[in-house]
Image: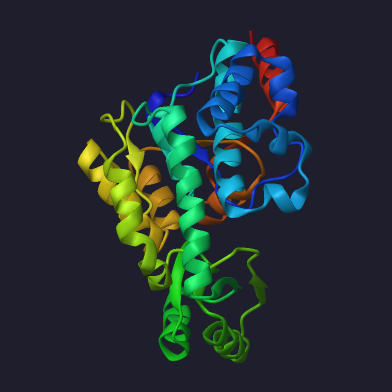
Amino acid sequence: MAELSKVAYVFPGQGSQSTGMGLDLYDSYPSAKAVFDEADASLGFPLSRICFEGPDEELTKTHNVQPAILAVSIACLKAIGEAAIVNFPSPTFVAGHSLGEYTALVAAGALGLADAVLLVRERGRLMYKAGLKNPGSMLAVIGLDEETVKDISLHSGTEISNINCPGQIVISGATQALAEADKLARARGARVLIPQKVSGAFHSALMEPVIAEFSKIVSNVRFQPPSIPVISNVTARPLTDADSIKEELVKQLRNCIQWQGSVEYMVHSGGTIFYEIGPGRVLGGLIRRINSELQTFNISGVEDIAHLACKESATN
């Protein structure tokens, strides 16, 4: 059995979605069905149907996809618990990438599910609103180091918005600024440049028009001290109380996501095993690029849970 001090649960962010996600969990585990039912009731519309049936253009709307990914991730976490895999380790840390930080807060008992889905739906609505006011987008830069990307951002009027792993950095900015950044990155030898399919320049100053409104919304949500350390996206350090969580969520909207730093903090604190819980397989790949010696496992549905259970049976 893994030592508790070595285990982290990590939760995905926007971009990991796919139509049909969560349906197998809903059909197989009453605890997962209860998550979707609670989310639907809290939001006042059938989010679960959008997860299960789409269409894609409806699911990928920012205000839909954020609560959808959160609900599927928590449903998956609940299904793991219901499966009662005897030696499945509890986490010493939880963390999530951007939107996934809200899932981590639910997993740590700092935020209730009903409040969480409402909060991230509002977050998505406001991010879209900011994108209309200040049109922009995001660009993943592959194959350049952080100092080079900083220089490109400085000369193009963009900002670094995600430091995901060595050689994978995302920048945000206005459309014209991103075009200039693309040109500069190519000239500096970027291996790949990937425009992100998002509705705005997230995690940058272009989100500023909605910060005050979002701050007011966050201030009215009840948070509890987390039962498990939640590693901050902004500081890459643990969040320990309700006030620091509220401050974090507001800052996160317009500041860089320090994913590499968050993983490095958990590793420095003894983390060696990372379970990515929720749709997609993005985080496991990033974590292995940060440190190839780490063990990573993805749990996104019934098949993955069954595989874990079979593996457990084989070792007993």
